[in-house]
Length: 225
Image (cartoon, rainbow, N blue to C red; front, side):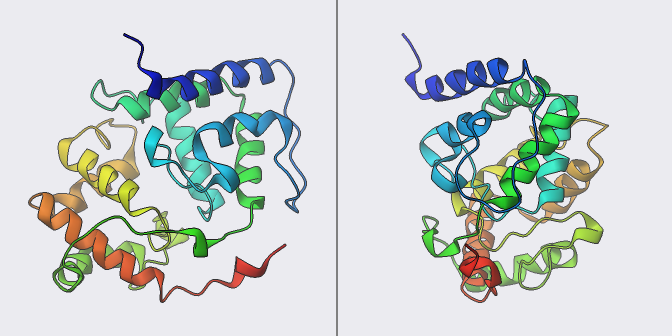
């Protein structure tokens, strides 16, 4: 039986490989429309890269360029998406590996050019945000008290990310399917930090608290054209 949930990923890979014949050119810094060679990104990650939970494709809209660059490098190098239990990571890994370094950088610049629209974000996780606030204290050392992230520590912004995606990534760290490769220094650090979470309730509670930070997050790029 075909797994139709995987069809968009496979379609995206075929388009990507076709686009990889020619060298990518960096898109314009001002976003107007999706460049042809990055149409495959929206196949899974959605219009304006807002994510798609039905195919486990995270929200890229609002991700820092340095974080996207780090993750593209991790996928291309096999540090991420190489664990046999990380099915969604295994889908992204060959797509990043098929790109040249120049093409990956062009993809990073495309993500950075898409205007951030946090007003489109909807919450799906139910948890005890008050209890999550206590659990988040460990997270705040790197990700900031407001979930704003810290480039110096290579810790991405959490406030404004899809809550279902945060849950799944925390589950992967706890299960050892992410942050398992010795070359993934940042992933190993994150896996160690998640050890304060002892189960599913802790994960839901801390993510519920991160959701509460989104409303407090300054959104200066919301009005960008």
